[in-house]
Image 1 (cartoon, rainbow over the protein chains, first blue to last red):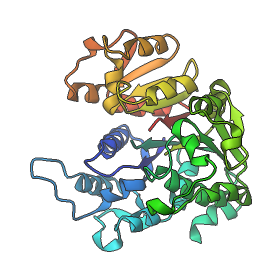
Image 2: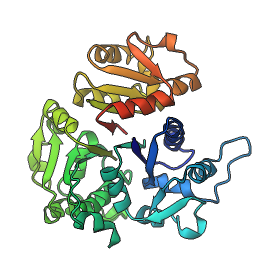
Image 3: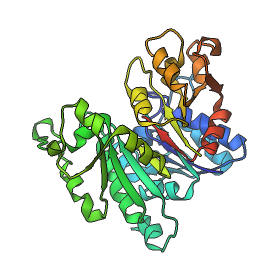
Image 4: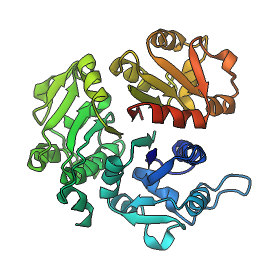
Length: 119
Length: 131
Length: 102
């Protein structure tokens, strides 16, 4: 089955991104396909490569990047929400791409299920 | 814009998209950014409906004056949704009543449904986007 | 196929779960994750509301979130099912669509 995932909160402040990540890992482990992970609202902050948590904490941005590299995930950061929050190409972590909201609607059309993680 | 190609390319897959708005405007950005998704979504020729429940009904309150809080008043955009062929706006009766509001207090014509009817409508969707 | 609803906030703190219950119908599934897992505990002010809902809806609790918060499945009201992330994935696949009560 093809899943679309929408992440609407940034890292650390809310659990949403962690939950979405664990969901994605579990879905891939079960042989499902992730059609796209779309980052919106404060969720765009997940793509910030300057993210640097304490060493004993998880690096959420790096987790997403690694998952994308391992499974060729399409991770899209909304351009409008990103610009609003200073998330631009120059600070984008590996695996994230900036594109328009149409990519979210497209995921709603093409994926079998769209799962929203927010707060 | 390239985003709209799927909608214009004779895409036969029409899905029922419901945008569920449950948060008040201005205190958080959810209402405004949900509206931005709705406007883009309109270009994709899907079956779109908007639902306002809980504090989401406050998004439609008449008379919003935002000058003194330094934010843009985006409420007129709800009145323009018809121009984008988005005509299915639903408000939950219980949410209105709980807030002492009547349909006359809203800045755009909506269909008011009880929770039971709205629950059925929610079940009939293909994609539900909640903000 | 019915709908899977997800809610992530404690019903002792916010009214999201109440709204979810008001607007959902018998037969649907409701998954409590993150802080919503507190809503399925016995002996809280929310227990009765959940127990009532569990009569005609399938209530699921995300086990990893429960364990993270220091509770065990034995402390949940009767009739709820604990799932892991894989179970969450299965639930999404088994239902027609998912609605998040964020």
